Length: 118
Image: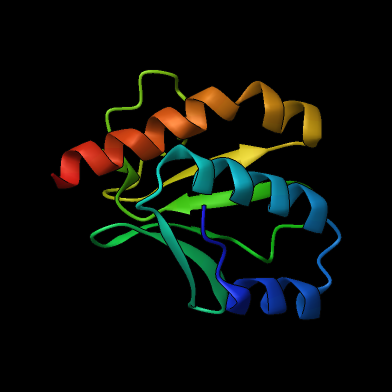
């Protein structure tokens, strides 16, 4: 698991009220597969593997919101991904307990994306 120092610096400067929760979601995503990388795009930490997987929605203050750019194409058996847009779906996490409860589902969604990319 290789964290990008640019993302560390961004999160430190941002001083988001849910930084600890964002960090935990970040760890879970990065633990899902060693090929996942992270960067800053659209003023947000973004996960990538052969394209953009998901970005944090940094304006959300009551929950951690992770936008899957092409989430509609991911076979999400758990129902973690919400929304009915043409392409995007969102995963929302309401505190540390909720994050831990959804950990396996989040990692399954990440692995499904990687499988789809070949």
